[in-house]
Amino acid sequence: NYGSDTQTTIQFTEPAQSQPIVIKYKGKSTTFNVSVIKGNMSVTYNKTYTKAYNGASQPIEELSDLALPTGASICSIEYRIAGNESESAYSTTAPTVAGNYDVRVKIIGGDNYNNLILDDISYTITKSDLTQITTNNYLNFPEIAMEYSDEVDLTNNWQIVANGEKGAITAGLPASQASVADNLKYYYRLASDADYTELTPDVSGKILLNNLKAGEYKVKVTGTWASNINDFEVETDLIIQTKKLVYGEDYTLTITQNDQPVVYTVSNSALNIATEIEYTAGDEIVVAVELINAKANSAKTSAPVVTFATGGSWEHTGIATINGVGAYKVIIDVEFEEGTFEFVEDQPFHGINVVSAE
Image: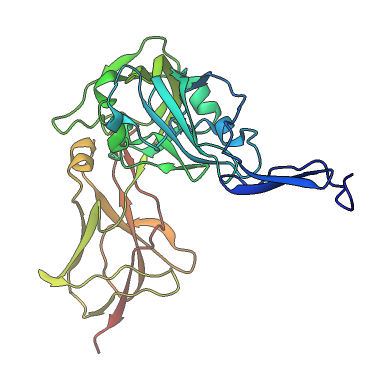
């Protein structure tokens, strides 16, 4: 006779708590306590993982998505180099270098389950081919465009990914890849040639191209990227243009009037000549070009010659001297070795406005 007490089953859902159980039968009853302890979790997971090196931190993201029972959560995922048995060797920072690693996952069981450690997971990061890295836009050696005599260091031509997007040209390989530079060799050839010439670093370790004349070239880099990338060979285009002389950097104009120096200012345009000279009949005005770029000076095949153009359309009549008032355009004529330097007329405009002193 259960009387009015009809509940005959009980679910024990409160862990580590003593729950009273009452049994009644034919007017008699007995009471005892039942304690529910935490249970052990059963988690399904892979014990081996393999990924290819990509230059970035490579956590095993699949371990973050383990199907855990309600209330359980991942405390940490830790990595250490395989073979190192030291407890302190574990780190929550995912590896970036190719190699073999031990991985363990610490799981907090919450209210209902005991804590669990999965420590039988093996993780391998394999070497990559350079093509895999460049395809993913992590690392690239892009084409090069420069002018003759520009100081371009090939070791700075690597592009490294930044925030998921291919970054700008680096100022050199990252400190984490410092050992890489010793493994790389750089070569060049004319695009029309078949054979490469190896480039040797200078005393500072730079691989410079500032002695190659204008033309179309190919650059090749070969080597091993430390322990992360298989032996590779990458080729890119190199375009070298004739160096356009820049006033103030490569050359200057010196002006004298009766052997006295005249301050010269570069004009903004042909309609706004900045330098004005007061002229008296018989004055001797001399304009000369000075090449201050040592390489340009060495590459010239003729001494700079200055003549003048006048008139509304700047007729190039080859006037050799200034012998009257008026606006004069300075014409500079100098020849350089092919593929080295050149003057670009009107960039900037060189002009002198000669006015009467009376």
